[in-house]
Structure formats: structure tokens, C-alpha cells
Length: 435
Image (cartoon, rainbow, N blue to C red; front, side, top):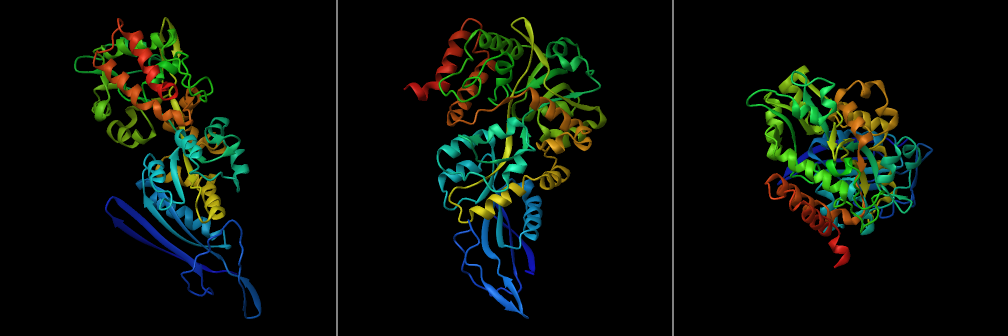
């Protein structure tokens, strides 16, 4: 039997906190030599110990990037993985790198980047196209069978799986139960029509944020990069449905009952009881619950009357995923650990300690998750949402859409110039393809 012992050392440096841990066989000679090919368990050393043959574990050194709040959880996951895999002698370093920062850092210097890191599914296509991600083939099939189709599609490029999803990432709506009823929050127009009193606001979102503003366009039937999100030269935000969505945004921005949630203004007003409803994600639940207690409720986004008809607002949904860099020296161990970090056991650990709602069907449909009103709202909205395109051209969307939303909020976009502004928006999103 290969006995292992694991120790952990917490380190901090400028803007980086890391956890270093090593595990090794008590019967293994100390050596700095590291196996460079972990795709197979080659060069296993057979030793004799009291007449019994023993296979020496393969040395593996892994660097893992996670958000700050995931450091301790990840340490627990790696140790549990190590306990179950005597074929590996794992040393690992856990460093703090945000989920939105990791892809850029990988692109800047893949050699020094982590072997395993978190990334939003919306960026998977770009990283895969650049050859920076290793397709996940080991241990993934059984996990894929427990994932919703939308999650699998979000990380599949040309038939290959390049990331392992573990939690849906989208926003929904929190509301104050003292100010709105369950029936009223089904319709944004009903909410806006209600008089909450002087010094109060009814609704807050982020028109000036391109991850929020799309909900009016997608809800009214517009498409970004085609119906399936793969047509790089196709954006219909300037058609008749897009025009109606733009009109709705203009009216909302000028409504005295609307509060733009810039720099957390909406969230603060909500916590102070001065705002009826605000869009946000599961990350806001702890502070909202602390401020409002049982007064806070959470639901999917409401319908809105756009262009004379009630439509369900539909935002982007992507997924928090775990990926492996293509040039890792230890592809087998890295793949297996990445899949384990998104397994039911790991997802339940992450949910209980961190609050990330699992995407796995076996967990999301359990009573434990369904009875959590925040998790229920997230999953309900994920059902209405539109998969965020993962093609490389998605990078051309964010800045033009933000600029459009800012112009709407500042009153620079009017009905008189709306069509021209929408045409310019679409041209900006697709311009890199036509220049």
C-alpha cells in the first residue's frame, strides 16, 4: 500500500495568496526529479518492502488558479482527490486568480500559467481557437450525462469538450416582499406602475453594463451571432424587434421610478429598503439577507411589454467552468482532477460552503437545492436565459453594447436617432469581420 501524507502551507504575496501542499509515499526516495509525461504511468518503479512489491506513485506538480473565496475549498478537493489516487504523488500550488482574469493571464504567458483554472464558458471558444486549452476526455462521459444540454453545448467546440461546467452564472431579480407581492413581480410594467412613496425607487438594473442590457433585446426575439450563437457576422439588434427593445430602454432610463445600479447604488438602496427590486446574482444573497432578513425574495426576471406584447426577459447565461491548459506537463492527472472538482461531491461541498448553485441535474433537482429560494430563482432564470455565445467574436460585443447603454442612460439616444444608433451598434459588433 502506498501511504501518503499531506501538509498545507498558506502563503501570501503581492496580490496573490497561495496554498502549497505536498504528498508523497513514505517509502519513496526524496528527489527533485519530476516526471514530464503524465499521460501514462510510465517509468513506475517496483520496489521490495518486506517481500511485498510496491509501485511507486508518479510525481505530479500542479498549479491551480481559483478565485480567493475558493482557496480553502479547492485545498479540500485536491486532498480528497489525492486520497483516492495512489497512482499519483501530487504536489500542488493554489494561487488566487479571478475567474475573469485567468484567461487573459493564460494568453499572456501559457508556460507559467496554471495547469488548472476557472473560466467563464463564454470565453472557452476563444481559448480553444487559440490552442490554449486541452480537450477533456478522461472521466468526463459520466459527468456529461448529469449535465443539462445547455451546459454541455457551452463548452463543446467541434465535438470536443474543452471545460467542465460546475455552476450556472446569470442574474435574476431580488425583491422586497414588503413592497411587492409575488404576483406583481411577474411583470416589470406592473412593478413600475406601483406607487411606493416619496424617496423610493421601484426597479434597478444596469443599462450601462453590457452583461445586463441584452435582456431587452434577447427577450424580444433578437439574436446575437445567429440563433445558435455561432454565426459571427449575424446580429439582429437593429431589426424591428431591436428597435422596440431600444424604445423600452429609453423609456425605462427616463422613468423617475428607475434607479441605475451603477457602482452598487441599486444594491445599497435595496439593502436600505428604498428600492423595490434589483437585478443581481447569487453572489448578492448573503448581504441582501443580512440587510433585509425574511423580507427579501428572489425570482426569475419578469415579463416586459415591449412593442405591444409581453415578453419574457432573457439574459445571457454562461457557466463557471474548470479548464486545463493545453501545454500542461501532466495532462492525465490535470484532467482527472478538473473533472473531480466539478463532480457531485465537489459541487455539493462548494454549494454548502460557498453558495455556488450546482449545474448538475442530480443536484439542482434535489429538494435541498429547490428549497433554497436563491438557487431556485437562479435555475428558473437559467431556463429562460440564452446561452452566451462562446465564439471568439463574443469579445467584440462588450464595449459597443456598453457604449450604447451608457448613451441611452445619458439621454443621448432618442427615438429620433435610435435606428441610426442601433445600426452603429451592430456595425461595431461585427466590424472586425468586414474591415
